[in-house]
Image (cartoon, rainbow, N blue to C red; front, side):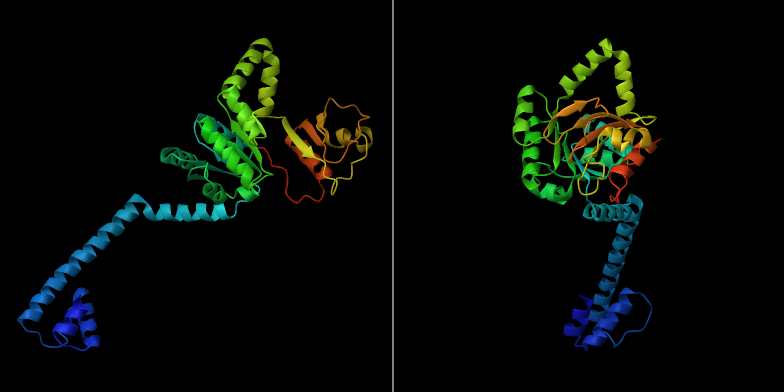
Length: 326
């Protein structure tokens, strides 16, 4: 505005008009570029006051931004955005309610790379305060799942409070990535059947599961204590793990358990074998033959399971997740 006034109204050259405006707003105390009449001086006074107000407002906003942490939040937002772009072979947790929080804590305990998505701003902020990577969004929408890199995800856990939301989330995720493993929460037996029909690999009802666990704790308390010690808690000594026998890298395929000497070489107890055809062998004997695409369900310490992973997948450059001992 100052440049236009001096240029058009006072008739100065554009360079002189711009220079006069700069030295006026900067309050450096230089003399006028050209003599000004009363009209020009009154405008210059107004320009000075406007400049003071503008600079004061900018300084106030800048100070407020520093005090309230806007810049830090921007840095954190950029860091989360970069982390989202780097996501690969990760887990997606939809919903950060009471169930979602327990899942997130267990994922962190196991050092699993995962991201949380929730529609509620308060839930997202609470997750971020706990140190989790969380974004606000609707998991039932394809755009949100694309943002969470569903195409490269290993597993999606839908722990939303509504059965309808879980149903839409499972349907969208299965359509976008036919190979991702999907775990869903259900409130009723009817919802369990519907979620399975649309593509959920496993459906968990907190009420049904909780009731069964309470009954088991009453009838077989020692067994439940043992199982809880394996599947949860940060002070565990033994862990359960599953291993896939990949025919491209596993040299033990075609051997019996006796010939492979997996127990003597690692100390790991092979609890069960899940055949590729669906057959489940509980407590396999030494004469059971290992077949391609078998899943070995094993029990052992963290070091023993690491050794097992190296033997069964010698070409796998990604190490087994090391359990947290804190």
